[in-house]
Image 1: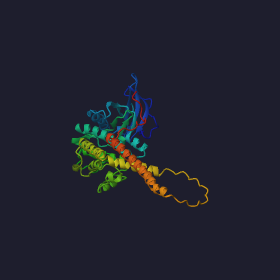
Image 2 (image 1 turned 180 degrees about the vertical axis):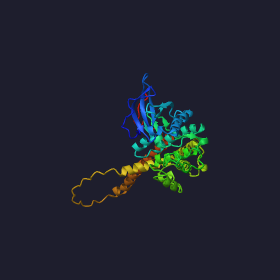
Image 3 (image 1 turned 90 degrees about the vertical axis):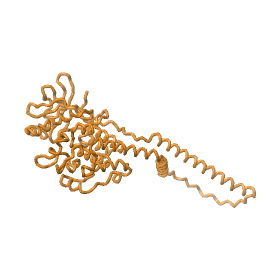
Image 4 (image 1 turned 60 degrees about the vertical axis):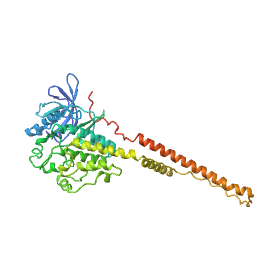
Length: 392
């Protein structure tokens, strides 16, 4: 029976590898299900990824499944989930023993926040993903399925790259880029043009493309290329999507250019690998920060406009209506009082204008100082909610 059609928790309570007792199911995908398990003797907790029974009957599927562990372990980076063991269950299904993570996927994180993330948060997460991919590419490994659902945010603030199930070595990426039916490996919307056609795949550049799509979606809430299937996606690649600074008001133009280059359909014009894209992203962000720091007056003016707008929207209290008084007969002014009235009026006016100018100058000076001292945007986000089990 296919694991997706089996009752929830069908493997709960069973023993895997004569050591790990399955406690609960975490999730199910198209090829495998993931469970939380505990060591029978020492109480250690792990994740057990079990290939669906029908897929376990396919030797090629089993080979690719086990290769996930081999390639993941080839990358010595804390952002890659370790695979400790592999084997076969009592019913003949292949399994992997992996790290058990505590947190949520980036896709769940994005969805829970209305489909979009703040600029600084999207940049921070994407930088972490690029750092992991840079280490991956240095080892000659191409992930080929980078997407928010395969990025995990732990409760302690770490970013993990999941699912090396269709990863391959760069030198064999071209030969392995197509299935037996002719369809490319990957996930629709995140597949580079050469992944769809399978012609002349450029290894690590497909991961660069996927990071560009992921970043675009995190910031704008939309895919750069609108499509429902591979046919529509291939047609959409004939046009250029609007850059992020045009689609999202206020987005830094320099960073938008980095993402735009990652989404170039010609792989030769893309960043060569994740390391090159990461360096470009850092330079663009530094340039954006310098631009902000060099123009604090603009920030102060914007802040003053916000204060003025806020004050203008404060509701006014009703003015009490006074009873009309009977008119009084005009009183003639003496020559002395007539000459002293004007200086008194102008003196009050000068006093009010002087006080107003002093207040504005003080506000602008404070805003300029704050902009120069605290111009660095924060990349800190709230700790994600618990979705998976604990490592305790």
